[in-house]
Amino acid sequence: MRVFITGVCGFVGSSLARVIADRHPDWNLFGCDNFLRSGSRTNRSPLEKIGVRVFDADLRDDAFSQSIPAVDWVIDCAANPSVLAGTEGGSFGTHSSSRTAMEHNLWGTVNVLEYCKEHSAGLITVSTSRVYSVRELARIPCRVDAQRFEPNWEVATSDTSEPALPVGLSSRGISESFSTEPPLSLYGSSKLASELLAREYANAFGFPLWIDRCGLMAGAGQFGKADQGIIAFWLHRYLHRGILRMIGFDGAGHQVRDCLHPRDLWELIERQIAVGIDVSKPLVCNVSGGIHSSFSLAELTKWCEKRWRHPSGQKQSGQKGIERRVVIEHEAATRLYDCPWIVLDSSLAQDSWGWYPRIDVQEILTEVADHAEAHPEWLMLSGE
Image 1 (tube, rainbow, N blue to C red):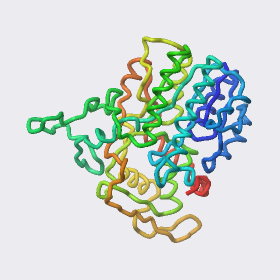
Image 2: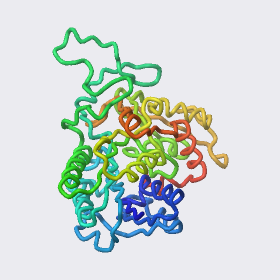
Image 3: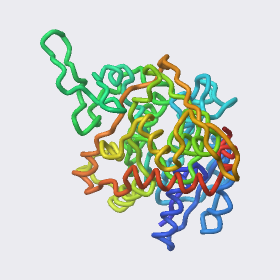
Image 4: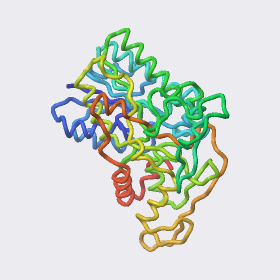
């Protein structure tokens, strides 16, 4: 089997490459990266040592594939993965203009699809929960339960002309039938457009395609920033930097997301590759940890306090006896694409593929915390 991973030196791409190399040492692994993300070059040498052939290539370049050999499958992990991509503050810094975001996330997809067409290669598209409508996500009626938002399932419908709960929302989370009507964000729209293009290409040219819509990806070695990789960012900064901001929704940190480890994503991808084309399986699936792997920023902060015994806002002794302070800043104003509660319902993947996440949120947090203790320089590597 010959597999090509785009964005191979990013967190998801490199994580998938490592697990494939470990479980399928007889497979030929290739990957490309443009190395624009701070820290990504640190993954190149370790990947090459385990047999991954890494190409320095930019998917925005129409000729990117000229040096890439033919493969059986492409796993497309390349993107500017920030919901702020194309707006001020996106995770690529000076590379975050709207045009550049579209070039990365949409035109790069076109070139990948042309490659799959040329070589009849199957495609796994790693998509995102942010293809779901911001307007409908904001319409989820939420109440505060302890330190988090929870949908208010008891909200009455008799005094309103529209349903109280958006279609596609249940106690299991947000399903694939949830609205994808814009606004989504420039990032979300580029990913949804990429999904549609992939479906058209696969239909027109007959290559296998699977689309996996993932929640927050998290684990040790992620290059965390405030707008992307929030678990890694929050834990590393809590331990080593001391200043964090709870933004939006009155600055209380009640907003909730669920998370997924890339190793769990591989459990599904491996089955999709083995099947190839199977019209009895759903083309698009949510893939995430769901309710049991959900957390709020307030809960994440409490987890840090328990792990490191650092009450937020109070003086503490840091490593090597340095006196420092953990400061939580609160900004009440909600930003354009902020949503109170995004938890994916992965029932379709479970029912259709027999897939379910094995690595829960506590294991993910512990893994990231161990990494933070071992790598105090990590946020500087990440560009923070």
